[in-house]
Image 1 (cartoon, rainbow, N blue to C red):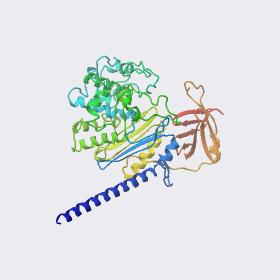
Image 2 (image 1 turned 135 degrees about the vertical axis):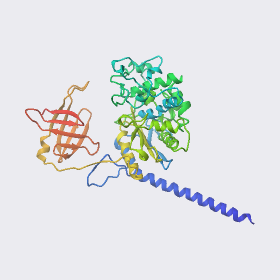
Image 3 (image 1 turned 90 degrees about the vertical axis):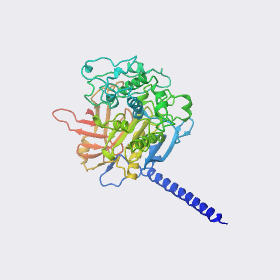
Length: 488
């Protein structure tokens, strides 16, 4: 009989623990639902209450078939959830294990390989990168007379190298090797130096392709092999791969890619021989594990493929607030590391605090995912009071109808657009508001005035500015910086 009270107390404790777990799960579901129903647009009108956007409705609005989100909070994976369709041909849904192309989020993950080789003494951040390259060298040029391309400069987009990004190769294209890409014999220009290394910051996927070649030559392994052996498992990224083209064993779990009109890309996705720049396939949950590993190693709670000292070096700001892989923002305990990613038919973003145990990743399988993921991240930032993304507050004014009508007309773009000939757009006045219509792609933009000659589209953030005709010059319009002359 003496054991009965002990048994009862264990049973009661178990019941309380179960109830606590149920209550916590209910609270978490309510938390997620609140975020899903309160996405925040990029622009708010001063004095207006913020609209409450619903996530699924906004996916429909932007023609985004599928999305996946992961949130890190208090040093843990707080939640991960998937939405929509991964493949409209098969109606396969997105789940939290669905692979997305990470686009340029590949870069900070690929950089870990180079930094690990530095940590091991096999590479140096400030040595001429040609020292490590075999079978291909950065072409000689006058810009290399005094300064050299180094690993540090490649990782921080400060090496003076060309080629911003890569379009990828369709399923029907011949898939080139890395030297073919470096030589400009694929579908992009040669990767070379066209300004003095160290002089300016300029984003260069080409530079990361040079880094990839150096890692392969020093390690004797392809980048995908090196990452699979030495980086991804140690970061907890067990569902991720740099395999390009994607190995068949991953196909059933990979999302298709979608254009801005919602149509599926032929062959389901493009392939990227530029693995370091754009070749990672991953999930938001795996990127959350990347974030957590960085945070925990920095805090001294775990060990990882890079030491605390190496990660601190990675998160040191260089030109344009760029680290050795990720972009950086804020300072001290509020330091953020981040990177966006855009491949054909995929749009993604990752933002995390280095020292506050928090972060968010949004991945989408659509070209139009950029605006959607911005609304999601602003909603998450607002809910958790993180101050990582806020809407732009604009003040809308009244402008006389006669002034608005003076802007109406047909406008000619001042530069030639290849394959289109003359490029015209129309400005109209309807229901008391100016509109710009682009018959070339069907785009229709409603404009709200922030000044007598300055306007904004409250949905997409497009800016339009008019300059009245003077000295026999035509009325001019700048639409997001592109110059048009009024011709009718």
